[in-house]
Image (cartoon, rainbow over all chains, first blue to last red; front, side):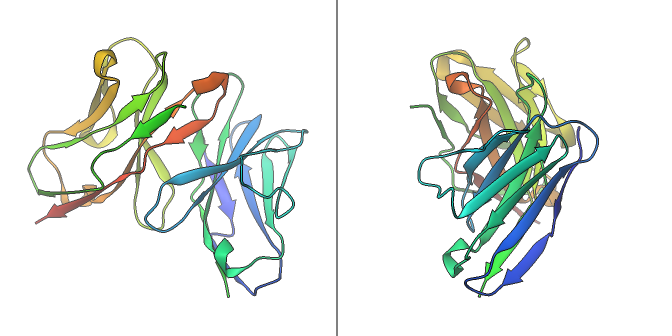
Length: 115
Length: 114
């Protein structure tokens, strides 16, 4: 399967600051990337879908001005949590796919803690 | 709306015992079906997938799953559980509503007794 990396693997930031999470597709061109968040002991909830070179499509209830997604290349997507608050503390996971494949490849996740 | 149900939130089995994790989906057509495993603090690892063809699918780590269209189910099985199988298991459905999105089940946490 494809290899997907995320950086950082964990981050602690202060309330009101912004934090950027990177998702990289290491061995194939990811035409589409997905961003999920997962609260403790819960399932993954899709936040947004991003296609390379296009604006991200956000799921209902996700604030697009708070969670900025950039997918500027076929191997890199970033999620920026702006003006983070403690309730944004969560596990953020990205996934990638290519072409018409329905299979997604998942990154290892980023643990965000906002103090 | 499409949905994925994993009825069992927690399952405890003894090491060496057999395992079956249930997954039911709600979707008019045959979706793409996946089972993932997640260890604490880790990302998702694909165990197996079903797109079409043989309804009994073999995966990694000795897991298998059977697609039953009549029951809208895709249950995961393993004949003999190892202590290292303790983890969270997620069933996912893809290709619904003409998109590439996944819908995840709520997960089943597996505990293995030595």
